Image (cartoon, rainbow, N blue to C red; front, side, top):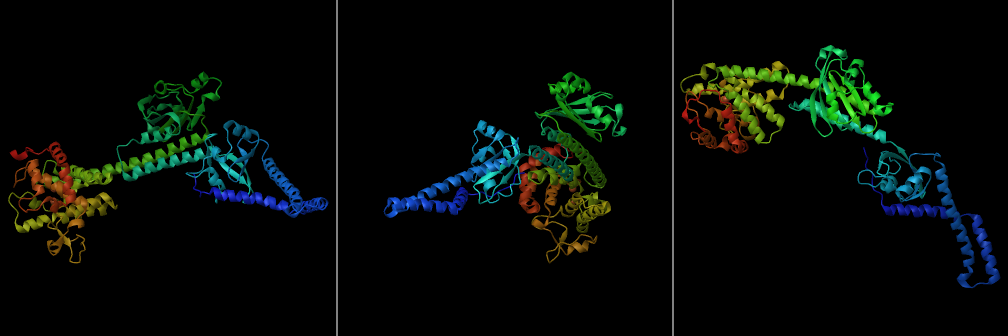
Length: 606
Ligand SMILES: [Fe+2]
Ligand SMILES: [Fe+2]
């Protein structure tokens, strides 16, 4: 709201004062009448008394100087009176004359009384400057011609726009203030409403969940100075925007102390204002002080007993508006309600209803997305050698490791949703999944192709949905890279001799034989996380070719693989492996809680 201004120096103001006062003196010195009068008087005295040396000139100078000074003072005072006369005879807002250093030199009427009462003799005592700048510097500095922002006065507790009359050659300034407090408050409310809208948009875009939209709306309204705000939703929204007396509503009352109370039920046909507003389809607001008696006000606008109990004090004013199936009723605003308050209430309700609808749509779309992911994963798990919730646990481990790494909460949530798709490519090699013997070399190579098939399947999902959902992009990268190793000893081969990564479109194993695997930063971080999560759960689980290992043994194997001799940082990167070591107990908890398969080995004990 406040602008920034350059600081003027006090030295500059003082120089200007000398120049302004000097200009008046200079004008008087140049007056021909004064000069000749001094010449005649001084010459006469000099001739009759015959003074010697320098004393001969004194009679010339003294009367002349007296004349000049007298006229200058009279002119300066006259101008101040003249300036004050320019003002309307009666002004409620302060008006006064100040010199070029901000000292108040003249005032009249109510302003004079105010200054006398508060002991004000300088502009800086009356007004605060913008930000760190004093009012005097802001108004009398280099930018003084354009003080187009409001100044706050701690003396009157009001905001003023400041008008100045004068110029750089003058030593005095006529200052008059116009009260713009209402405008400033309205701007502040608009800012608050804008911020509220942005917060809802942010939530919508970020797909955050678990926060109460109603609470946010109530907090915004309470910050407008109400004692309590009730938000209610119709139980029968199908009744239309003006449902008449056939619908009841449930509401929550939020109070300025941060508490929420409810639900409060509003019965169908209740005479509370909330139902009257619905019936009449408009905002209703009133103030008990506008009525002859409070009892008459209370009879006209009966308050629900529950709400009255929560308020603990009589209703002095209220404002009620509804939009869609959301009703807002705000109680006891400090001071009197005005049309600006109602505009804010209406705007808040309309914005909230639109945002709530969009949020609802986004959340429904989210649920559908998760449902389809779960469906695909369940189908894949059905034919996999792993049963008992392996892929769901990989989701949970991955989310937890990502959180430990300090990734963005949204990214953690997304990873915890799509990590389960990592082995989706195995649906393309059902003949290898349940073999009860060790794989041959060729079979092992074909098995490794599940990474390529997986990314192709997920990419097909992306193309079919016609959207570039970042979650499917992440899932595609995870499927492709979750068997890569940080030191470049994983699979599949993807990197050409010139260092570029090929697009994995081919289903031909030979295509990938010629290429080297990805390594280090070439591997997306989510894939490294899922790689560790996948391996932890596979080692902990019973397979046809191995028993289930204990948590301690798996931790040791991840730290150093006894067959390959690779240490954890070489496989998963030091960052991801360290995150595992920092939080491995949590993975153990997830395994125990998510364990549904029949345990097949005594080593299951942690
Ligand atoms: Fe895999
Ligand atoms: Fe897996």
